[in-house]
Length: 540
Image (cartoon, rainbow, N blue to C red; front, top):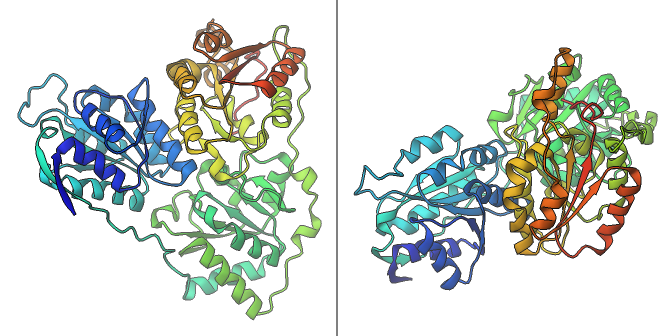
């Protein structure tokens, strides 16, 4: 089926052909008419951001929470350069999204905003797809969406501005994406892996972000082995409610869980790249048999070299291992009978003591864990504050947990919180940010959340410093004053931007702020005033 229309209309229609109903972005010369057509002709929803990079971040979180390709659009030149950090974040997080990026006119190579956009995108690790000619637009859009899903990364579709008003014949072009589980473990390596697992006396099952869909199969395998189960940060919340869930594996473990991991003799890893934070730079894996299962070849051996590696689907492999354990009548390990899960999952408690005019951070997190809405989507920005949040604030499941630290950046959290909120209507979004991160990205977009009417709760951990740098000066017995800042009142800013801001300087004010959450009717920001000398070290 085809029909005549302008190029910009065909791009908008092609996005709708791929099921896109929400598009994030910032309009400019090379995309404004496409956005208008998406809204007026296709009935789509356009979410305008205050900064181009924000629109990409919103789309990344939308993709993660909604489980489909996120879409953003920006114009050319500086608009695209503003997206470099966000695109890199999406690449490192393996998040499928499409960025519809305008480009300067092909006929004007000396355009003021001209830049080699292909080379810029390549530097981020994102994919690049060029609209080759006006009459190939349907195929080029389809190719971008296909690649985003198969390659699990952002794809930038480059659209020259001088194509926009050319007339084209629109044709529906949607490519089938083959997403069936790939690979069933078999052969000699499978036999070796099963032998290692069968002979283990203290086995442990570890699941990463690549194994989220295999929850039930992994639990059946763990129960059969009588092995405790754990997750990487990316899979936080996957095993909520299981009696032998020791929560996050690695530097974010409780002291007791860390010791338990050290005592285990076989770690069976599903869908995790085993990076340095998970393995504590390899220390936690010494003296153990490591079995690694992943569908991605590049994930195998990236952090450390396993004793057995199975390039296969997590769920199918867990079922296969379970089948052969039963066939061989291998007895359970009995490891879980030794465990006290209450001890293994208890992080050191907060004292409640703090400097005058400040609250104790750990104590505040413990109270927030009790008081925040249970059906929340949890989003975390980057910074010194974040590791305690990861350890102490729960998420219902991995899809309801958005990490914005894939590239080690700060200032990305509020933008992703907005995307998460639009992907999960009716659910509250809780964002934890530091003061530096909020100044960098939060102020830009807090009013966007207000305009959208989102149910957003922002917790700003304000130690009036760049904490990760502050602690390094203290460790060297140097003056940390260059890392310290006299910020404005974040609570006051939130109120001026149309939300509700609450400053917390004491335990009593913390309780008042928590009570105010029960009657919230707009985005709320709670500013925790912290002593920079009293914020715990990062657990990395």
